[in-house]
Length: 407
Image (cartoon, rainbow, N blue to C red; front, side, top):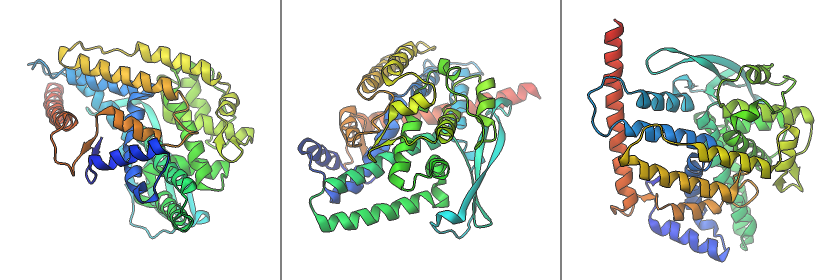
């Protein structure tokens, strides 16, 4: 986790507040940055889909050592294909159009696109994008991707941290100012064309469930994302099939023809089932009724799902055996499983995101650029950047060789 404009003192101060349970509004901006990035760390290590990416990452790294004279690197290619499909930046289009955060002036419609891998071979799956309009002007086309799900959780973390900090503050004047600023930040975030990839999942919840306020929107979005990122593939046969009203039958068609895990489509299935149930899944205006969400979707209770997910996590193994990376991979996986055991499929949705500050502190994986210190985390970060460059170079050579053979 790299922080360009923070020092280790920032994290230490937040940890001190956590121990005292005294959260200061003046440090909320620093906290927001830390819990945002730690949310990504959490999703990569402590969700089933994140661990599947982790194993692809380490299998790809293992092809680098020892150096090989072979011309084809399947694990590196698979990693880059997966990473490309997770962010789909090639399908993102943003136009320079004047907009305002006036909800009734915004609309979107679905588009579908097929995909090719890095060697330009057509893949068997397609994905959905939302074509956003402000009034009659097209603003952006944003793919609904894994990146969007991760960013949804990260924005939940920083927004809810701020809200809890305001609620717990004893400074009434500062509370009013900060509450107004949170509302303004939310509007800027959700209705900023440049940030739609971060807010697309929240848009869906707000539009279809008519949540009415951003707190409910983020709580529901976080809950659905947490289920989608963890649901084992076997439950794709058991989850309730929606009638197909709001997504034009796409979710039902997906469930009929599914071939592999697809958290983005599961997010839409969950949302459509809740919409069709007309149920209120917010309890006392404060908590997501997680068990009700599962029940609506014909899924088992939290306890059973946690046990099933844990079994699946314990099956995740490297295909490539490499002494250079096995220890690091094992350590990451053990850490991820330990975090999952603490927070489960709920992912902390009903507690203050300050728990992510503690995870960041325990991770020993934070790089604070203001300190300019070559810590173990900094050296690993630097090594990671160099390995990424090497994989990119090898991939280019491999692709060029493949194209030469084809021609």
